Amino acid sequence: MNDKSQTPVVPCPQCGKRLYWTSDNPWRPFCSQRCKMLDLGAWADESHRIAGEPAMDDASLDELMNRIERGD
Image (cartoon, rainbow, N blue to C red; front, top):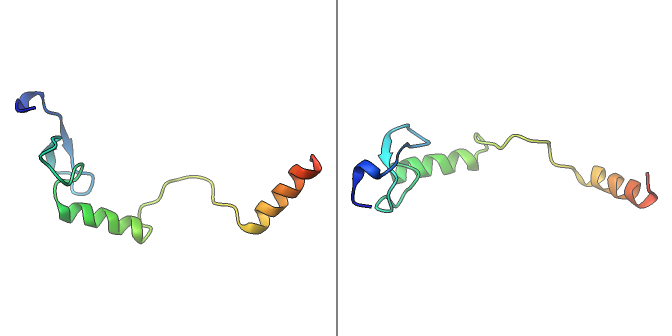
């Protein structure tokens, strides 16, 4: 896609800088390696999280399996 008018422009998820969505950018969807690494660091230190139910611990999982086996 050489025609820039047909290329989507998206914001960098880290800094918000607008960039063309092309295969020329090795850090897609980020604008740079720096933004990519900052985002990875945020996931690693759990600043970024996916919302949802908390994971079951072993005791809760065992209790659930016992109830299923009993047919409760």
